[in-house]
Image 1 (cartoon, rainbow, N blue to C red):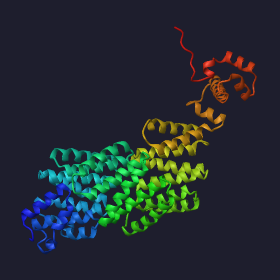
Image 2 (cartoon, rainbow, N blue to C red):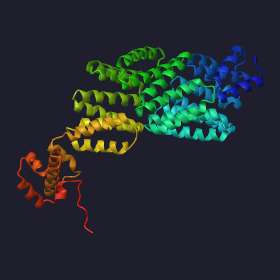
Image 3 (cartoon, helix red, strand yellow):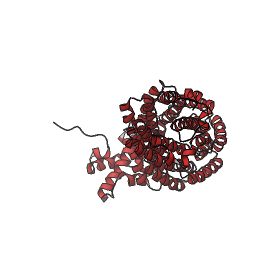
Length: 486
């Protein structure tokens, strides 16, 4: 071996500080000239494969691991868990999450038998990452929380920071943006003490997503541009492409449509070269640019392409995003029935994913689509959104909820009456409900002047006086109750 046992141990210890650059400069190609199943050769190959995978060089990763991909049974049992873990990571980098999950579980079980706590903890984290890619976000979240507890008990701060990063990213996809931001910032705080610029950049991309959700688009753009510069310098095309998607979406929120379109064009070229599975997301962002410019034809074409790609990729989250944006396009074109059809399908997917924020956004749009034809359902949907919103700092979602509420409030008398009661009322109650609404609306317009309110309704003040004898005044003027007599 070109390096002795002590040197390899030192390099392996550098993994715990995130100093992969030093590991990369310390390794040479001597690993390729010794028996593949020698223990030190295995250790060297695992380090080479890990570094290649971080930089997105999957072919080099495959080359380093090739002896073990087809004949893992020949690996000494003492190295089996670590080899299984790295092979699982190889499949994860190849966008094969199901195989990655199977191998990571085997690595965890093997490490558990041999009491290799460090490898077991990393296997738990990789299980979470595979589950995340499979869009099983609840299970992924549980795995990352378990990994956090194990890393904390083992006093491994760098690995702890990585686990916080992963947990925050999943929480963000699930719609828990406030918790996601806190978790990600906690991870960044830990990783700042390491030498791992790559994972710090990944963390910044995820924080930017949470910042966009709470309306801090300028700050999000700075995070994304900084991260993109890091990935571009490292030659990591996959993450550079994904970051460009985020930059384009952020520029749309900032209403910088020319810049957004330029970034989308570059992202499509880079995504094709990197063989990304997220191309549908880029076309969906392109559609948002066209929608903002009210170019319905181009938006429709982009969404058609996005829909086809998302179906081929079998990505539930991309399918939900595309249908959500298609529903928004139909709403702007006053095609409420088409919008409702797409949005109901998007809602089903979002609920299966348990993506709560996406679910709320779709419900707000669906409420607008259903307002005219099914006002009772529309009122129910927007009430659920408003209850979930509360005081959460989600300005974009709040804007959609207000649009839905305005559309419902603009309905005529008969439609308003329909959604005023959860059940079909008795005739007497129905008359009171309708009169309450008519009188309250007239009083509001007349700024509380009863005579003017009567004029608006086209009746005489005498009629109003007779009416108030039949129906108590506090029923006619909801919200104003008489003080109780002591």
